[in-house]
Length: 172
Image (cartoon, rainbow, N blue to C red; front, side, top):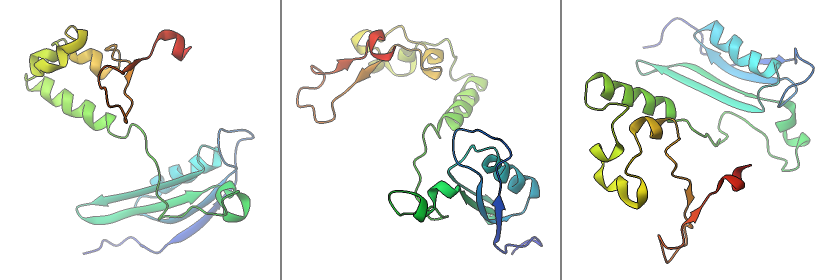
């Protein structure tokens, strides 16, 4: 069953509304949205030069209610060295997308009294305390300040002996 909104694909050319921005110079937005405000906000990101390529698909109770993609002129095949364009089927790399869900899950555990942010991680995962990590709290992990700055060579044959520590000098 579909609701009464139109799922007809609409294409909008978006002109930049700011002189400078981190990414593209306007763009084209294609697709449909049950909520006009969502489409307007999506288009505004291109107008403010905050996007090169972007996609948004939302389902509500099993029904696709938003299906939008947009691309800046710089991503069109004739304007980039790869000759490849951006569309609704373009695969995209997404970083840190799970942090919100992890924070909600932890908040639920705290709310239920199963975990406290001040708990040592070892209270829930004893093995974590190996190699001097025994004083790190759940809060430390959640805010990425647990002091676990190591890079492991994925091809290592001598793990953990050839673990590389990241020093403050490496990040300044």
